[in-house]
Image (cartoon, one colour):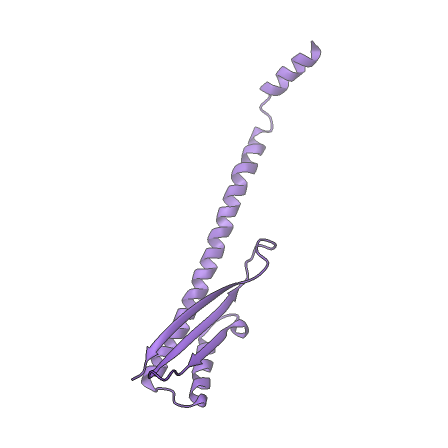
Length: 132
């Protein structure tokens, strides 16, 4: 009979329910906050890539590149416009025979949460500039 009384007290006892509720809701809230932060970083980096491509587009339209030296100066201008991780930025500039120029920018994004995703996510921006 004593076991039955203790079992009833345990079932009716409400201590610890706040901790369990916080564990369930807190995990969801922290995951949501980290997701928003990571998404914001990705949008910021993508915006920087678009800004760098805009700078390259303006320079290419004002003074169209004709030699490899011109393309190197254009790449240097793109790298200067990026505020962080310039060394990880991949820049491809091509002058196709159609009279335009293709710009491809790639920036790897490593997530802040360790162990969530081991590889980096690559953000890519492609632009075609008609020069003729």
